[in-house]
Image (cartoon, rainbow, N blue to C red):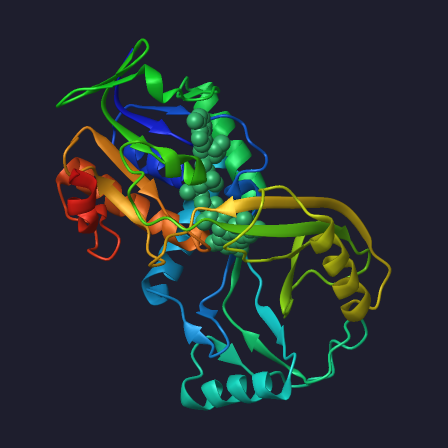
Amino acid sequence: MQVDYLIIGQGISGTFLSRELLQAGRSVLVIDIDNPRSASRVASGVINPVTGRRIVKTWMIDELLPFAREAYRDIGSDLQIDCIAQKDIIDCFTTPQMRMAFTGRYEQDPEYLQLPADENDQRAWLQYDFGYGIIQPCFWVDMGSLLQQYRRHLKQHGQLVEEVFDPFQLVVKDDEVQYGAVTAGKIIFCDGVAGFNNSFFQNLPYAASKGEAVLVEIPGMPDTHIIKKGYSLVPWKENTFWLGSTYLWEFEHDAPTPGFYQFAKNWLQLTVKMPFTIVDHLAALRPATLERRPFVGLHPVHKAVGIFNGMGTKGCSLAPYFARQLADLLINNVAVKPEADVQRFRRVLSR
Ligand SMILES: Cc1cc2nc3c(=O)[nH]c(=O)nc-3n(C[C@H](O)[C@H](O)[C@H](O)COP(=O)(O)OP(=O)(O)OC[C@H]3O[C@@H](n4cnc5c(N)ncnc54)[C@H](O)[C@@H]3O)c2cc1C
């Protein structure tokens, strides 16, 4: 079998990259194991334009947000699913200082922020002591449905092989790669944290961060907004909410822990005024990087090998935009944005 591109991984990165290449008329084969505990499958799917205690805008959000909104609408329309919805964040202040930080930022620059007409209007279902602000517009991506439907689509077109990619079977030549019976012009690794050991890119400054979440049923709880109070409670599917997450740079393993479960239960008891049932407990490693910027582009020495990784905590907004950039590099030789271009590590990758 001969294809233009062999793509390893069908998380949110492999999904958008393969789509861009297919839309440009290139042939693609994706290899992916069906891993329900990958970062993309565990993620809450939120696109939040601000971050941190100082409520600053996230990197490139003015460009990323409209791009992502269109990209999810487009892919959803092709797959006949609704995979993006506006869900603004009700940001419950956990201390008076947080309230001051929010109102201070709002006075300086109200973009993406709003103050509610009535701060008490959430009290029927929520316990909060210091009021709240609104972050808007925020979006929720239905990652589960999107990844599943796109996978089905690839399968129907013979563009997906469901197996574990074995690097020992890969032969890299100057202008193509051979993998078993497949010959491809290029191989692009979109394999998330599994790629941290990839012999071509293992010298990159990765920094995996572990996140845990629970899925919780709360019948009658409104699903119009995401609630943030330290953790985020994200409307998921009918009556079910995603609650998380931790950001751990040091951890013993990537599995769910009893400690987080207890923490989540306490949070729910202290915050939600209605009966709830925890129905699942998830954990995954985010493919994060030390400088919090993705790795996008071709290997400086092995020109037939590329990478699309390092989406960190922001895969939902970064993947659509940088998939277009990588496709543009591969097809039209247009350079990737320097902060994301893997060529910035040319020296370390050439060793
Ligand atoms: C708890 C948690 C919450 C998060 N919440 C958000 C959020 O709200 N918003 C946001 O933007 N981001 C969020 N993230 C981050 C987001 O999940 C990641 O940025 C994004 O999913 C990374 O996608 P990816 O496709 O690069 O990697 P992955 O999702 O890890 O996908 C890699 C794919 O490669 C496959 N693969 C790997 N190795 C092999 C192999 N050898 N053979 C075959 N297949 C292989 C895996 O099975 C997987 O399907 C969250 C992450 C976590 C853990």
